[in-house]
Image (cartoon, rainbow, N blue to C red):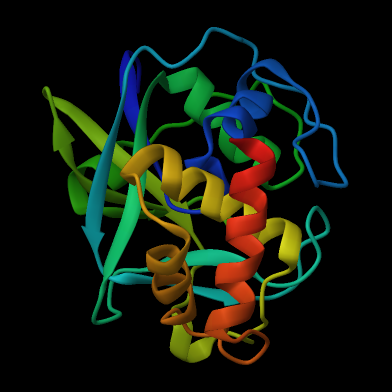
Length: 211
């Protein structure tokens, strides 16, 4: 696949500063990892806020943030707040490679995902590509785990990860700390480690520092 595709982010890449580390390289605020960046370090050609049918859940353990990571499950009975970035097909391939801690530089044939709506690239946690729509004649893709929330080992997210999610939801959707806390705590995995007041307080404090 050549040309441009929409990458639809629903986790920490909702925050533009964090996502720029995938494109141009760098270490996001609060993360324990430095990203190499894409072969093409140009910024996204366009971006837009959107929502998806289905929900996110928190599971496994992130080596970058500690705590659970966000995964998209289109079968969950909710809506997912997302942010779409218009990238080259090569940039999208390099984003997936970095997510799975692989070397960048290998282009992907995503024709199966474009035609059927789903394509498993490998066994990794973010190597299942899902087509979530089209915009301007270009496919919109996200990636997630091969399984859904019901089969996952749920794990509550860490404070740095929640702050980054809160930053992205504020940027893309203009949500308050209270609304963001309600949204995140409705996701499977989050309630096991956090209360509404704790998440709202964490996000309000982050907003004061970042604003």
